[in-house]
Image 1: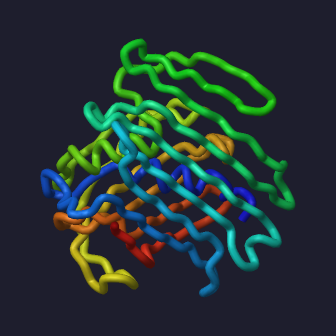
Image 2: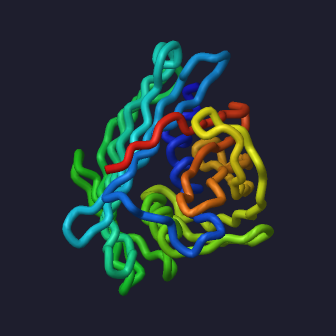
Length: 251
């Protein structure tokens, strides 16, 4: 459980970037929040949420992840991520990582990083709040943080069966180029029963696990909602972690 840590939410956000076969989702709400849980032996070990809302000239995407139940005795996790995306261009502006975690077999991590994106200069300014530190990173064109790329594709992109999707993501640790493959599937969900979905699957090298390769797979409803309803992670030396959507709030 200690090796899952921030890796789990990074994986969750890494793949929440895509839409179904509709050109745009039916956004009849001002904000939406998705609630997820991961279970082992019928016990919830992780709860996570992902929300989208508006604030002035920005879309704001927020994510939370917390260890629960018996998992907290082995690994405590209380992480918060926030991304501000320019509404006009859907370009990333600011990405805030608040990491608070500690495990029996891992070091305590408690820090806040603020990433400021400058797409025109292909630069990212990374600021560590305490102790204060600043560095400037060069990135390729069309590089996004995990949350901003989710929103961009959620609002803009169209995905079809068999499509290959390549994306560049920088999360303040490492620049990654990831390729996902799309396929249609019918799956059972606790919230909506049996639904048609678009699945996205990729092999990914996990830097938190010695760059060893694992697999990410996520399912979206194949309708105008584009709700991300389930996710499967196969992590090296950790095993399978299944996330399921248990609640959706709109306002």
